Length: 485
Image (tube, rainbow, N blue to C red):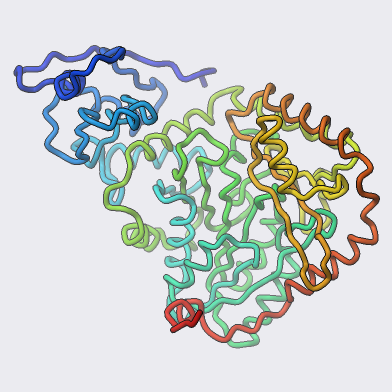
């Protein structure tokens, strides 16, 4: 495959009638204030197969009188400050369901072709484009697999969208606890033994568990034993749905751990925007095998997704897939991740989620594009470190934790999380490493070894997260119940 996306140029067509002016000419008449802007005279579309991206680019470039939504008419008018932020190109390509652009709810042309290319790239039987993030994919997957009266088994570290999905589906829920890391103060994945016990308990209680929903990789970068979990689910005739929001990159390089589908999951939902080059909110849902009802997934998405999906988001999914397949694009992000992990493990006062965790706490691999740093031995909270990094060093973290056990007045260990992606450069890594060197030197020795404290923290965390949960109402009934404040 080519080392980079190459582009072909489409020559602009002249309007067949003087009234059919281009959006650029319309814009100049609508706003006569002087401004320095180069008018677009050519249209660039990727020569690599990106059916939807190409269709959007071609349609945006046509000289047409726009009497369709949206109201800005391909950027003919807009607030100047909005134009400066969003850009003329984005306005011009912000299209709707026009001939040749297909229809997301019932795709037959460009969208269907792009989804098929994505299913091949992600090693899936079928793929759906999502315009409301992994959230809507989780909603659809649960609604497709669980009916009212059925049971969904949820890992307790699932995203809030999983609990909302149970409200939509009207299903019952039971829970399984993930393994907890006392040193870092975070949850990892669900171990197969815990899942087996949870399913056995559910069956003994008369529950019909139709699906199990777990998270892998976790927000912190821990990969679960999906193969073991899938085998157990299928023995109980339950589907395995994996929230792989943070793992859309896993299929694209052998240096990454295996994706959930490749390990036997029935369905995985990915936030393509998190580690690939898609726009924020753009995501995909993938299934394999015959256990998942594809027709019900489509039906659920027709109910849940907008009937006016953003073609900018969908085109970005098409382009992000093609971009991720290019030779060599993952070399620098991987090199940056290795450099950060290696350098930070050598600094005093830091604890890392690293390869040393593999084989314990249900961790079978660690995502090389996610860096989780424990900072409790610096005498700082996760929020302290995150704020210092941003204000003093212009390094912006993805997440910081700061948990306090009020009953023991004990600070539980905290972490700062750094999310790498396809756009991460070595200069970013060097900037982060340099900032941590300063922080560690500045705060070295402000807190001693955490051994005794960690024992208390582990006990406290266990008390805060009971292994047995007594549920009085289904999530749906609880949502619609009267409440007092």
